[in-house]
Structure formats: structure tokens, C-alpha cells
Image (cartoon, rainbow, N blue to C red; front, side, top):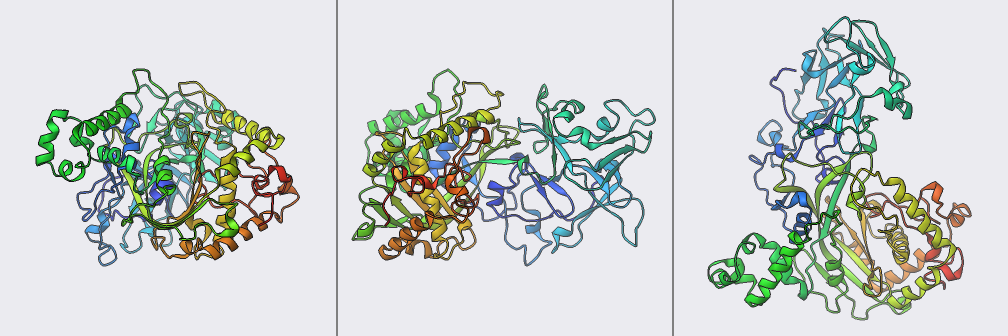
Length: 634
């Protein structure tokens, strides 16, 4: 398709949409066609006035631990400029996230001719600056009822588990791998009668008359009819050197498994006193990394960061912290090990569980009621905090196709790159909100763990997890595989279930719907790591999540009513007895017990584990008093 004068803007998405739903490398299904979000190399901030990098040193440090992201120096919001509403055709309309039409095979809705955009058979229309959703492609075959006929994207693409995406090979497929005997560039026709499995889609060659139904490319029997993956990354406009060789799968536009984001998120919480030096070293690493210790006096005199922020520590202490940070980045030894998920929760736990809350900042403020935990809840919780302000920063670090990434095991699924070269920045977003933090007594949890550790019910949870992990492991990546390596532990299931019970009850009273709430579970794995906390918070970009309704739920009287109601309603589910009797089965490959959409499940934006590791019987006496964390009614 020849370049022409047309408006560039074809739609809009929220910043959080680029983190979780349709970021770099993802297909965005617009009303009349689909576009692919380009790689970071093509993002342009030249005319994006007023933007600033998103500051979060702890998250930036975690990002740099990935070998692919060692050069990342900042986190950036998506390019955007004010003025779009006042002048939709002005400079602001040319600022945004770059995309390209994909797939570039289009079908005429009148004559069903199938062709590519570069064949000059199609034209682009986008005339109304205030209605970018009306952008469309037309077929250049003459007017139909006074208007050129609409052309829509052919709705099939190929993807492989290595993160590659490619056009469906229509010419290759319809001619069964051979060349058309009548034309070097044969014209094709697609009779698409609906259905998502290809059974009603027939392809035909207008030049030679060859026909083939697309169902022959779907399912296991269709794998032999498709060529091997070419290693294409269309968002980077390149092919992997040497190709890929994996067997691609046919996907329909809009398929939920065409793109899964890999996101790291961190709360901008002040570190405990012991961690402030490490945070400063990470923040000013560029200044400190190449400076020898004998150069510190000069830095203290002439470098404002060193003079203003490091005055509390002597040169030896700062140098030791610098070397520790250097070792964490580069000192893992010559042996290549599978990447590990960065630990972003420990620092948060240290702040939230500290005996004395830190001083309030613009990003973080907590308050502990003078009377502490309400009297009726002292057997249930050991601490309650009202988090009046918090800020969450999210960074997109990569994406996968076909298989969703595992948050604990980055080596389980192949990750696709965001740019052609190692990126110097990553896209990020930040949201502000409020929350409440609840800590469960350690002695209560330890006693419960001893009761359920060897139970039949917990054994089934462990077996199901091993099966789940084994089924997802692809054998494509190097390194050993241990089915139980990232088992979250018994206490995680109890804390996670309790969190969901509270979220569903809170949503009825606090002014936010449950999809606007998020959770962070702090669960330790042994006696040396006695973490046992739940943070329920808002992360809503619209109202900045600070309506005060959630914080008010942590007031003593309200919290008592809230917990009593949550535990009481957990005893019953309208799907009982089916729900109450459910246990995870290895052959079924699901990771929940007595849990369903009626009693425990929440939206995907709320749950940090995709509604896995949930079971009411481990919180309330649904399946017996010995299994319940809280066997007595409140």
C-alpha cells in the first residue's frame, strides 16, 4: 500500500492496558482491523512534552538483574501530550505508541478477495480526527452503493511458544506447499462463513482453481500441513537468525493466548533503616560504579547526591554497600544459571511489619490505631495498619505467547524481547491508592501448619501443583526442572483464601468494586522467614484510588464486623455441597479446592495468582475443625 496523507491516530488505550492487556508485541483488535504494538526502538518521545521518568529505585534495581536489561537506566510512561481534545488534528494526535497493521492479509467483505496490503488492492481511510475508531481499509474495486467496500483483516495468524508471530501462509497452504501453476502471485479468495475453528473457512486460488478448507490447518492433525516457524518478530521488524524451527499454532484474532505480559511491580514504600543505604546505592549506581573508594572525598565535596544523601555513612560503609550491589549484578559466578524472580516483597514486609511506622511521605503513609487490634480479633490478627497513601509502579519487562509466564519461575516459558537491542529504558505506569494491612499471628499459623501438613487434603494440593507444573514445562529451555521447587506453601493457601474472603466482603461496603482492589500476600516459607501478612489495596488510575473507603474498613468497629461477616459467609456457598467437597485432582490440572465463582473467585486484575491456591476448608471449618485456621466462630 502506497504512503498517503492520512491521520495516524487509530484509537486509544489506558496506560495500564499497555502493561497487562496489549503492550509491546501484542495485537490490538480495533473495530475494522487489528494493529500490532511496535517495539521500543520505534517509540518516539520527541514531541511528548512534559513527561518525566517514573522514579522507583527498588523496581529499577530488580529490572537490571535480568541479563537482557542490564542497560536499563529509567522507567518511562507511554508517550502522550495534552491538547488532543482541543485540537484532535494537532501535534498531540501524532504523539503516542506506534503500531502497524497486522496481519496485513485482508479480505474484501463484498467479493471475498484475499490479498496483502502491499498489493495496492487496498486503501486506508481515516478522515475524521474525532472518530479514530472509524479508521478502515477499503478494497479498490470500484464503489459499492456509493462507497468502496470494507476490507477486514483475515483473522488467522501463526504463533509459536518461543514468542514468534507470523502471517498465516495462505498461498503455501492452499497450494499444499507448491507454487501456483498459473501465476507467480496468484489471487486468492476466502469464503469465511463464521466459526472459530476454521471449519467454515474455505480458501481458493482464483488463478488456478485450487481449494482447501482451513480446518486442515487446525488441531493436532493440522500441524503437518503448516511450515515450521520462521522466527519472525513483526513488532521488531526482524527474523531470528537461523530461524526457529518450532511448530507454530494457528490463532484467531482476539485469542487470549496470543500475548501474556511479564510485569514487575513494586510499592514505593520507604525501606527500613537498614535498607536505606542499599536503596541509595542502587539509585546513584551510575555515579558510584566507576568511582574508587579514594575518590569518595571528592564526591562528598562536589557531587550533590553524595554530599546530600550519604552523609550518614562513612566511606568504608558506602564502599562495602557498593561492592555488595556490584556482586548482586555481576557476581553470580561464571556458571550460567536460570534467571530467578527478583524479591520485591521483603522490603515491603519490613516496612509494614515494623514496630514503628516510618514517617509519612507523598507516596506512603500508614497509621496504627492507638488501641491496636480490636479486642474481638486479637486471636485472629496480631497487627492492623491503615495504609492511607501508597504508590505502585509497574514495569513491562517482556512477554510470552501461547503459555502464560510463571511469576516465580521465569525459566518455565520462553520470553520475547521488547526491542532489537538491549533496551536502555522500559515502559512503566504508576497508580496511587490506599489500603489496609493485616498480620496473622505466627503461633496460630505454625500450629495450623502442623495440623494440615500431612493431611490428605493438603497432599492432594501438593500433587496437583506438581502435575500443573509438569504440564506447563516445555523442555525448550535449559536447566533442570523440579516440579515442587516453587510450591508456595501451606500458609500461602490459608492467607490467600482469607484475602479473597475479605476482598469480596470489603467490596460491598467500601465504595470500590472488587475489580478495583488488589492483593499482596506476604507468606514466609520457614521459621527463619516468619512472614504472615495480607495487604489489600486499591490501584485505580481514574480516581487515583484514594476515596478513603478502604482505609475506613480498618477502623476497629468496622473491621470486627467485616471479619465476622467474611468468615460467617465462608461457611456457606450456594454451590454447596459440590463446592465444599471439591478437592484438587492431579488429572484435572486445577489448583483450588473448596472455591468457586460464588464464594471465593475474584477478577484477574485483583488476584495475584489467577484464582489458584484457594480452599475455604483451610480457613473455616467446612471440611473439619482440624483443617481450619479459625475453627471457632467469631
